[in-house]
Length: 98
Image 1 (tube, one colour):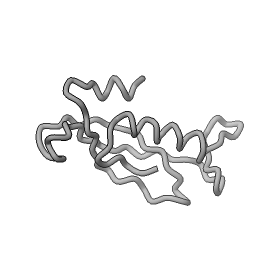
Image 2 (cartoon, one colour; image 1 turned 180 degrees about the vertical axis):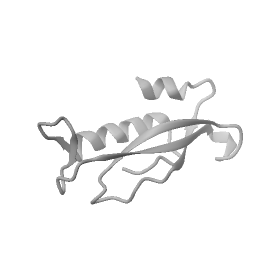
Image 3 (cartoon, one colour; image 1 turned 30 degrees about the horizontal axis):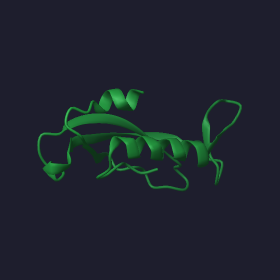
């Protein structure tokens, strides 16, 4: 999975859930492994700017820290920065924690 860019929090949460359901499986150690190659899934921390769509990816966005799952064998390391497009008043941290 790659770092979100120009997407909503809802889209990212759905993509992450889909990745974990379809691209991963658990061994007895309760660790996720890639369903393609069997490599243990790693998690990379990314810093995501959450800003309104009208700000066109620049402006006064708040930064949220997000863990991105990925297979180190099949995928590139997720980029350290990305962005969410949010609605006015949307609490990104609370939505990601749910």
